[in-house]
Length: 382
Image (cartoon, rainbow, N blue to C red):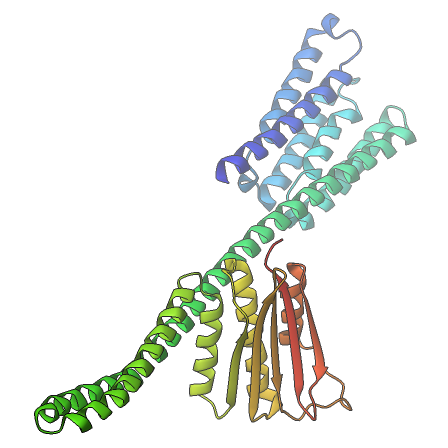
């Protein structure tokens, strides 16, 4: 990025240098080689202007601009006393160009200096021969160059802001992925706790009953045989819980999408009084990270709004994947109704923009008998 900026700056320096050289070629005195001193002075002015042009923008300040203008005016006046016919008003045109390409932050200095330079051009025209067209052309050149300089600065500012925006977006995406990872970890922890509390208790009970069965077989084989069915039932229940946990963890390995949503629901449920129901309809595939982030943010913003504004007791969340589209439905029993007007604030507006950015849609409708229903549909493919 830095090298590209340097080359871009040098490219503009080349344009400025070329323009100054062309100006001095056009402003060559009549029969220059018959008057060598005049030609040397002409060449010296050109070299001086070229030297000034190549100075880096950081070198310039208010005092240096004033110094350059005053010095050139004095030098031109002295030379004009020696050579009555040279230089003419055109010697100040490159100075107007120099002031035109100045950074806008020096406008409070360069604009008055440009007016002074135009006045110098006018004075020299009055001494030699007034040319309204030439004076107008000089002023027009200044405004054209100045406008181009402002446009270039605006473009550079836009590029810088775009780079900052892209960096902020990347950081936000990374933060979202981290939040989803934390939500997935929360869901894993919940599953582990359920396995420990449910399956662990069942396995403990099974071990105790098996130990009793071992002692029972020699003394009461009939009762021992009857207890086998009960032990098999406990074992099958435990195995079903293991299969459920394995299936959910295997789905987790496909991506952070559904497991992160379930983890977010678990977090909100554990830290609020809301009664929440989460249901997945049908099988779910692996989601791209971008889509997972969007659905996570939509659910997060919806739950945040419910906690802040809805005064709801229950929230139902349904997740369905069909025809390569994911549908997320969040409905609550809050105080919103069809008689009220939904205010689209920053949160709901952000949800709409996220869905729209990937070709999806989102709808906000009243829930029956009261509450709000949010239905987001996101395509899994661009």
